[in-house]
Length: 124
Image 1 (cartoon, one colour):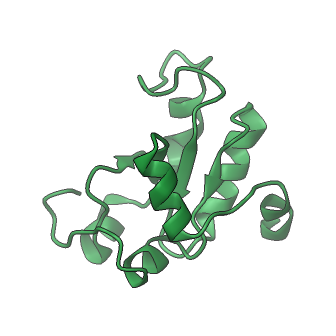
Image 2 (cartoon, one colour):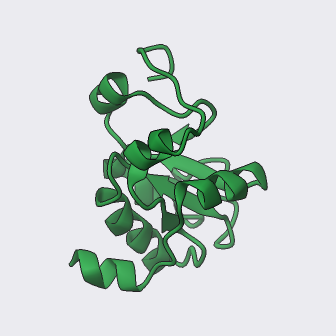
Image 3 (tube, one colour):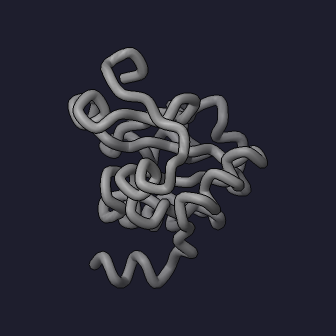
């Protein structure tokens, strides 16, 4: 299942994700609050937990986020280690969000790359 999902998305490194985010993409953290509290978070990222991701980013959904303006929205999905995010990004692509992808290695790789992150419960 994971290999099949990954074959349909163009995964990005943390550095490429940071560049795309700076250019206007949405960095979406799908980890549960307890995991973000334990591991840390990326300031300015959009938190949308995995169990609600599809209907929050589907432009056709009545419960969509304000950011879900169309199927051309650039969504970069972030989980802890880059497994759940691959499945989530593939689900978004199946909705029609053609540029949806995930961050290789997830939050762990983001931190290891020296990219901005915070610890504690303030941003959780």
